[in-house]
Image (cartoon, rainbow, N blue to C red; front, side, top):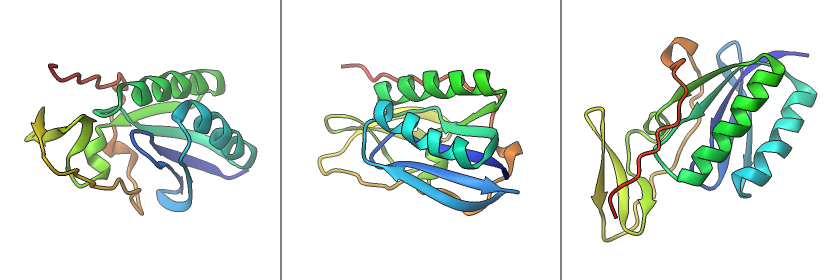
Length: 151
């Protein structure tokens, strides 16, 4: 089986998964299901066809539940299968655009500091998988970024 690295962007719909061979995107998977439903099915397909060496996930900010489900699922998968888990802030994959928090609040990347900002109109900055990756760009610190704005 080919050895690959996997990127998981689980913070919004659709969930995006990129399969990378030697740093180049070779396959894209997506799902409009909730993370808890989609991740097991998508990863069963991936594990049936590839040998995963590294998984990179978006550690936040974003949907608290999506981050929590993805982290627990991916961390467990990595422990059981001896796969290295890496992480990156979600802003990496949406050109530092706003990320939905709740209501009219959005997370913003203010020179490395995560803040919230209210927008009257919905901000739909899509996440995109990169065409090429370099593993050294991603962090070994994989704890989720649970940024919860004041209510």
